[in-house]
Image (cartoon, rainbow, N blue to C red; front, side, top):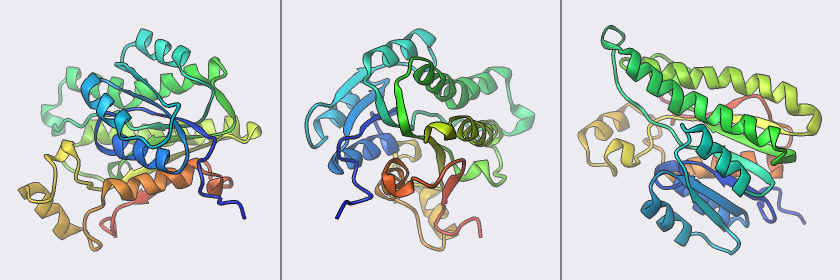
Length: 244
């Protein structure tokens, strides 16, 4: 019997693979049989992720995705893809009354423009196979209001609109476009592991406790696999019940 959650034979690009959720998603996808194309900004950490992958035939390329020429080089270097997971991103806190144009521009370039234009170039260069699955990493802040994360929240919310439009455009090719909206997951962005004061405070807010990178990676596997062949234009909220 065929395993609908298998990624055997699928070629998948993971951005932001040098740390955090991107790193775990890459490792978990390789364990399910995928061949990975990894990219990130830090050569040393990207190499560490590469070395942790099961299987063979993987590729990696250091790239700064906010630079058009580096996005283009990534598209040229990579194979035709069955899946993409956009994990590269950055969060910077600022209440609206203190918001600067520079910070807003940075949030736009990193969290919206880079993944959108990389996707556009993959489509234009025919590097996305028919029936490919494209997954954008969002956040629960795309669905609820959170103080001081207005710029980040705005960009993640904008990706929701992009996901719906692209899903409609590419559906005739069998292509699926979705998002994952996790709440708090201990990663280097949070200072890691559970004993930091912000993470302890967050845990108290989540009925099911905090998530793990493996939880999010499992969601990515589902959306990349044939098990989700009838799912498109939506975002899977993973929040341990906090939105309730």
